[in-house]
Amino acid sequence: MERAKESAVWRYFTLATPTCSTAVCNVCKGNVSRGGGKTATFNTTNLIKHLQKHHAKEHAEFLQLNKTKGKGDNTATAQQLTLADALQRREKFPTESLKALGITQKVLEFIVLDAQPMSVVEDEGFRRLLEYLEPRYSLPSRKYFSETALPELYKKVCEHISKEIKDVKSMSFTTDIWSSAVCPMSLLSLTVHWLDMSCKPHGAMLQAKNFHGSHTGDTISAAIKEMLDQWHIPLNKVHVILRDNASNMKKAMDNMGVRSLGCFAHTLQLVVNEGLLSQRSVSDAIAIGRQIVGHFKHSPLAYSRLQDIQLQMQMQPKRLQQDVKTRWNSTYLMIQSLLEQKRVLGAYIADNDLPSTLTANQWALLEKTSIVLAPFEELTRKVSSATASTADVIPAVTVLKRILAKEGDADTGIKTMKKTLLEAVNSRFDSVEDEPLYALATLLDPRYKDRYFTSAQSAKSAKDALTGELEQLEDLSSTAGASEAVEPQEKAPRVEAAAPSKSSFMQEFDQIVEECGDPSAASSSSPAVQLHGYLAEKTIAASDNPYQYWGVNKHRLPCLAATATKYLCAPCTSVESERVFSTVSNIVDEKRNRLTAERTEMLVFMRKNLPLLIK
Image (cartoon, rainbow, N blue to C red):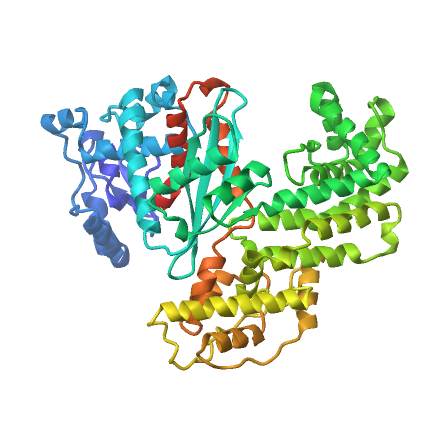
């Protein structure tokens, strides 16, 4: 009876009960005999004939369904499995079968991508799950995954990355050093970033090398040079290396003879710290806020009471954010979380004690501080994104200076802090427009061009330097196509949409572009005039993709596009190396503190790069 119900004919009939001798037609609601007088003799022949005689359309659909399933009109019963087939379905897959190898590959990907320990293959729950999903699969041992499967996949990913970067002419890198808190291990990271022939950005982690000995400039430079040699990357392909601001890192890059830049986000955080510490009233308010957050962080009972009040006020339960010195923007986020819970904290204080409380004046100071720090928080997120480049630095500094220079009634009580922030931006970024790596990248970004330089002399020097580089590139390439006529750029029609509300930070970007006007473009095929025409064109929107722009215009502006591929591949922070170490901290923990450095390096490498292979 169950086999009969597998027939497609049951899409058109319904049974009142499983043993009913008649079926109800869903089309005409008539009762149709199922044939025979006993359950064992029931069939679907009468039902099919009913459709054929009274419902031609439904009968045709039924025939098509049966054809799709590879069945005839009278598939009342399914063929019973033979003994040989049944035995075959119980046999285990051969170890080298495609199915077994495929499952093993997916298990390894699960371990790598989700940062699982190798011991997961020995866990009872995981083994029971695989046994249920595929009884014919035999899960290999932990040793096999660790010593055979992982190295094989590691080799495959390495070959993929080597193939990707083989013909890249210019690459940028980030590097940093991390030390474990749970075991005596230090790692030196190296990530690579480049643009392909279509001007699409790519990045990969090359290594997180076990770093022995003292962290001197000499040992760091030797280690990085060794990593580059392992990947067959000559120093003349190194455009720039992004590092932290420590003196040993600076010395290491100088020893190697490569250009390097300090992490923009690190420097920006130093600016914020100077500003927060400059005004006693602000730093005192922040210190009290830190005590309040710490009270709830270390007292489950206090947090439970706070959560009850949040629910009573019909607010979503939310923890207060604790600031951490090593975490960018955490002070701003702490202030924001306090301001969001201001009413809740007021209700809490009515019935409970706190180690310290904020006065009305201090709450007002925190609100004003939050407003001043908002552009810094937005900028930090912007430059920490995977698509940020050194082109973002000069415009960001220009915008920050303008925002901090504006005075208003809301500055009452925080003028000292705001003034110190402006002075810190001016002092720490005083020569940013004279740094060729920043200046040329800014010119080559179609969102910025020369609109954000505050010094006319710096802008002229940058243009002269870019012109010289373009002419040198033309001399080196006989096939640059300098004699071809420059065709007007074909622009796709843009669909105008309602403009989203912009922050003060982004509004200042637009204001600078409007002040520069929109000069008409020139046309010529020589590099110098190509540059002049490019700079004369209107900038693209700040939200547009500069890499996509060069992908579209690489044939119209070949020399500029080739140079942009070199300069726009450089990130402006060492965040990618920071992210590598975030991955390491998830792998090397209290339960896995005996992992060898070699195995740790391999797992981190795979965790960061495996998506490049399986995407």
